[in-house]
Image 1 (cartoon, rainbow, N blue to C red):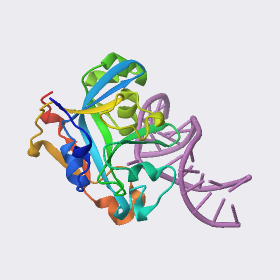
Image 2 (image 1 turned 60 degrees about the vertical axis):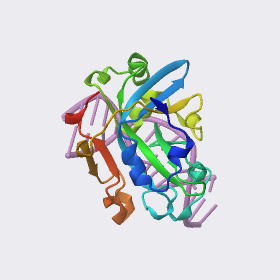
Image 3 (image 1 turned 30 degrees about the vertical axis):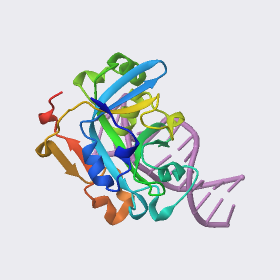
Length: 197
DNA sequence: CGGCCGATCCACT
DNA sequence: GTGGATCGGCCGA
């Protein structure tokens, strides 16, 4: 098992990175509680050239500034006034790539996740949907721009192998506004039939 | 300063 | 399948 740090995130190819993140384990130490889960679904957002990205066209605002950090920090923002969506910022400084965490398979702290979610639906074994995954991990906008590998949020490689054939690649969810870019196959999901954890 | 809307989720029909 | 919840960011005036 190894802790993934900065160098892992500073590669240019955000789409490959989104695929590679499948099977890695996201761990949080928030509110005195440890929770973790295997990443089972991601989406790549390809910086300034991607209409679906908040940083499209090089847009810099208070919110998007985090995306321009060097890879290896969190980018968290509020969506629909109630959901905190969690991304890994990737790429070199000033290249605003990000990978949205869309689903995890819970490992540690399942009772904590159920409490945070106020639901028992974790029984079915996974937490799907970017809002619920972040909520289960205890991540809110307070955790924007934090170093991945710091005290609160870590990413581990526990040696889980994700066979290429078990990966489903599709267009991204909820980005109809992005025109042609809405069709880009930047979403990666582990086929539930292939779960080995 | 006002108005629109989103990288969503859930309850309900 | 559909609509309501709910609010910060963003843009135009």
